[in-house]
Length: 291
Ligand SMILES: [Zn+2]
Ligand SMILES: [Zn+2]
Image (tube, rainbow, N blue to C red):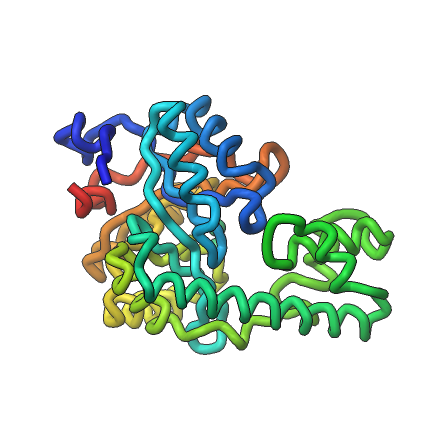
């Protein structure tokens, strides 16, 4: 892979290039096509974009093609769902080899898990009085596997909830009946998938798990022990205090730092592509390991 933005910039650490290493297209639960996503990233002055759809790399080749037209670099990526001590945790794989057999089998396994999970969510919702939940959600997911956002859209459409936020609050969010996560593979196994695909394993959005700091550090220690190399020190909108805290954790466990918007759709609650605080100077950026 050639990374023109990287090779033309010898001091990536102090560079002003915008790296957005976490975002979603309509190949998972994002709204934009891979092409539209890349065009939008270009308009937002992003130089290096990693497409990290949930448990699929289906959009990466399309993103790469569009990036050649637009003149920016694409890092092949994925965001795997895993579990740690029974809690759902996301592991981003960056700079992965798309042809790696272990990656392809991991993607296949996750796809089956997602499909199975969709049926379980549908069963729960149907027991709560939501008719034809699977079929309804499927209609909102023309491109890929049915996920919680698609159930949320169906719940709103059917008048069970006023909006998506309420659908998560009542039916699908953490601790609610539709929050089924026990079937994801263990964090250690998922880190191995990324390493076997010659990728960099990144612990995604550490502050989103609502763990105590002690728990979070225990998880980070296990992640590091499993071979994890980096952590998202910056994930979209976040408080400066959180950035400083994760930076301290990154240093404590000798992890590289990553940054990304976790963009899903224009407007609304999601952060815009390329629009987030810079990595602190004290942090070694994850891309320094790719040169
Ligand atoms: Zn995530
Ligand atoms: Zn994400």
